Image (tube, rainbow, N blue to C red; front, top):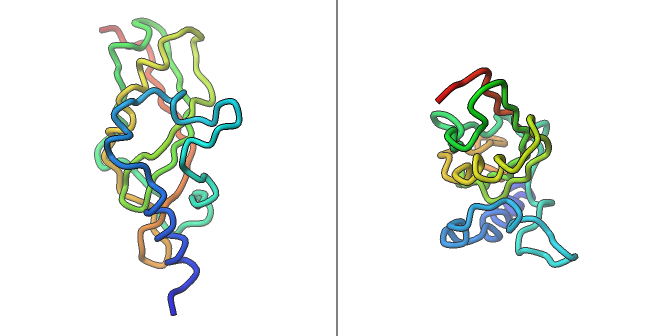
Length: 140
């Protein structure tokens, strides 16, 4: 008999979009629009509070820094859904400073971030987390 945790993990892995679906990295594509389900179920992902170890990038979050404003501080608050295999399946922009249309381009490569998945009971599980990416006074 399999445990409910392993069943949830398997369901999360089975529901992950194929890698080819991740080539269009705009976050709008992966949100529910006009009530149409885009093929993933956020209920299959555990919150950071529910796991033993949280998911984490192996090096750092991959963002397109050239797309960010050139002077002053920038802030992106993003919720990410990470599969049990460490793939960012989905993300949504929650907040940005300063305002403007730069955030979509800045996040265009976020899903290429190599992740260590969250674990529960020693096994990798699909999870969600909210991250803050900030750069202060960077000039490029």
